[in-house]
Length: 256
Image (cartoon, rainbow, N blue to C red; front, side, top):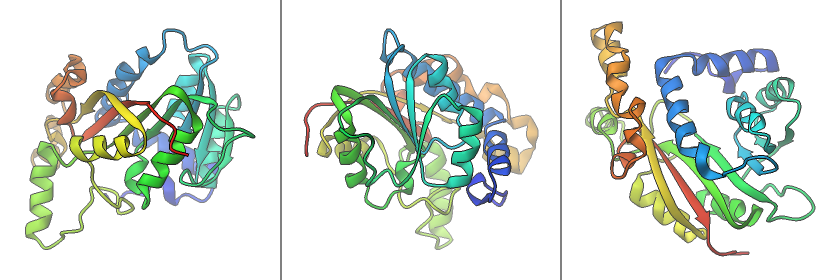
């Protein structure tokens, strides 16, 4: 994708506008709806729940957690978008830092939930990142990881296309991605970091964006999001086959 990203913005207002506009489309809205449906019931009562949000960006999820009356601490590595989120959601706490090494608060194991959407695929040492997140969770705390999936129709089409053209290092639409995940690799990574997977969910099963780009905007239709909109993407095994794959996992042991 050649459009300017919020990651390139140098001031908070521009970064926030670019971030929010990137979700103002069918793809972004359905992805958020699907994830909210999966996360909504993690806690019977969100009031007082402590959430550590990683790569919080422009605060779509920060705002959602705050409306649930959760306490939110946001970790962000880019200062402009962090400041944009801070202006939008002043009730949250904000830390500029690297989630692989960051330590939050005077003591760890304080959080009920770690939420990391579109983050892990950017991190070189993903094992270290997951262990650090484990250390910040209470016993029985949960982590939600959402990333791109190599076990899906979109990857089969686009990945094969790029591979045949010699671009064997293709990692999706964002050049800052370092790897793909799937149900098996992500489950293994989480297990190694002390988590047990509990639920899988996904979105973007039918690659309508490819059809739209080549055959016209008529293909950008909710018809192609029926799996997500009918709530079927939270049901195993459908949950493991979307281009966007999400997992809820629970802390089982402390590896520190």
